[in-house]
Length: 110
Length: 456
Image (cartoon, rainbow over all chains, first blue to last red; front, side, top):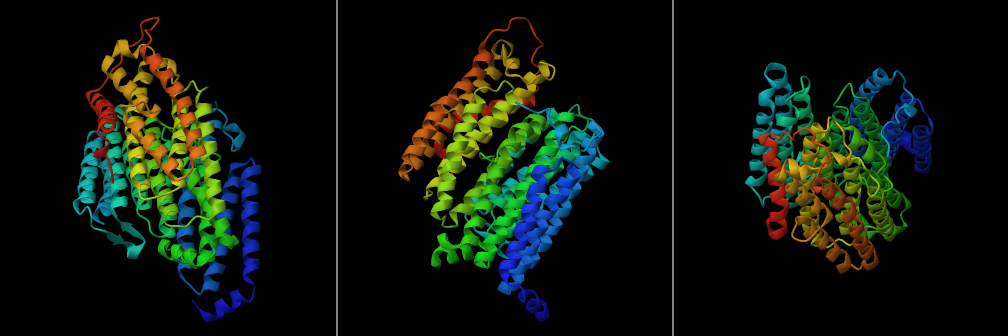
């Protein structure tokens, strides 16, 4: 990793990165739990994953260890694959009920 | 490891076969490929081979679980020959996605690095999201796919956060390095590590459907196509438990995390068994039964010693055998009842086909844990393990719940042996289905009588 970038990242204390990541993660969780529009829920899931990416990058700079950054690439890859599948399922659902409201999903119960 | 490469290539080959030739050869080719992978797994049995620069290690533990995964997939493919016989489109994709999912399962049986744990779980899950929605024009299948996807993605977010925090505390993704770190540090005091463990275990608990992360399981089991439900409750569950154990066996769990596991076990045992009592849909019943079995398996995790892998292996293997057979019986009965899934459809099964009814009874008794079937030995070993490790009250509670559990299995058996009021459609049993059901039915008895046959 470029030494200048590490120094730049380290100008902010690690705790701040951790807190920011937790904040973003919590916003994501709250969005998944409370929002009813499935597209927004998908965006919130992405927010959760990206907050983890941020955290990993910060840890990586502080541990001077590039492995976490490689993991970030894997996470991006998986997130892309996941969203591809998720959006296709969303399209299928839209075709079936003509809505993207999660409250429509209530036929499986018991 | 050549078996892993073979499986990945097999998936691609199946996809191409779907483009160019008839549906008839898909399952045979898939089964041949799986059998070849089986041979490769078994070839150098006690050799430990590492892969991907040490991210994955194929030791005896990984090989044994991989073998079970492949064997169960072969059984499901045999069932698939009949199940997909009338389906016109996308059959190749179903087989290919199951193989891809299996690759993920093999990876999480053998990971030594948290990166591989995450990737394996995702490779296992993403094909499943698609498979759960396999019936494109069915609303219920779509709903199952969407619920599974949403909750799965949510859970992987938690898992990832947990992994990131563990990395933050220990500066490594490698299991051995994390263990070395936790041995020298008083890990109970490190907030990052503790929180990381909690979140990671929550993510893993989601995959094995432990309470309170079980909400997806009944809905997804009910909505997904039956073959996929069988796949989820056998292959995926086995792989997830193998990964779960691999994770907690390699990390010294702090007391707080251990207490969380105990609480999770108690709730899983209670909720799985009690809610199953009032189920009338067979697939939902199997879902809650699956949650209940998760509880028994978690009990084996509580105090881990040298016997735990063996106990887990035997339990998961016999559970998978009984479950596969029962889902095939369900498909047959469901066809005769024109798509109904209520347990009433089993009524008169003994009159219509005595052998199938007896095999189904054996499998249900095995799930209930009646002596002479494999399920009894499996439960017995879990209880012995629990008591030996000092979790006496938890084990007693588990025994009590096992007794409660017998009721809802017997309920299904009673339906099968009650004569029918009016004559219904004849049960059409394809020879291949008959073979698989007989194998499963005979298997649970054989393994119950000779438990030594199935061990790591």
